[in-house]
Amino acid sequence: MLRLRFLSSLRSKLPPIKPITYFLTVTKQTFDLIWSAGLFDYFDDKLFAALLRRFRNYLKSGGEIVVGNFNQDHNPSRAYMEILGNWFLHHRTEQQLIDLAQKADFEHWQLSVNREPENVNLFLHIKVSR
View (spheres, rainbow, N blue to C red):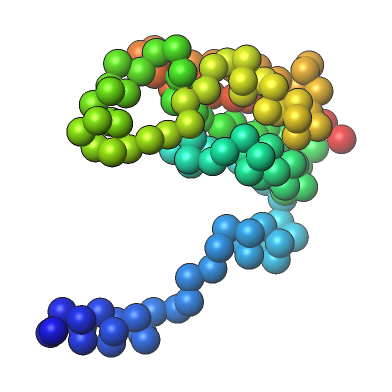
C-alpha cells in the first residue's frame, strides 16, 4: 500500500507524458540528421511509413534520415528474445526497408541500406534534397 501511495504522489509531480506526435507537430525546427535506432522495429508497416513521411518535414535540404531495424535474415539471438524474453519485433529485410521508404513517397535513388559488422541491424539511409 505504501508503494501505491508513493507512485500516486510521484505521478502528481511529474509533467504529463506527451506522445511522439505532439513533438512532431509543434516544432518548426529542422535538422541535418534524424537518427532512429531501436524504435521502428516496434512499428507495423503502416506506422513505419507514416512516420518516415512525417520526418521529411523536419529535415533540412541535403539532410538525411537513418532508421535502424533488426535484420530478418540474420539475428542469432532472435529465438532467445522471443522464447525466453517474450520480446517480439518486426524484423525486416533490406528490400522491405526500401519498399517501406518508397511507400512513404521517397524515390529509389534517395535510398540505401547499410549494416553493422555483425549484420544483426540494418540501417536505412534516406537522403533528402529539396
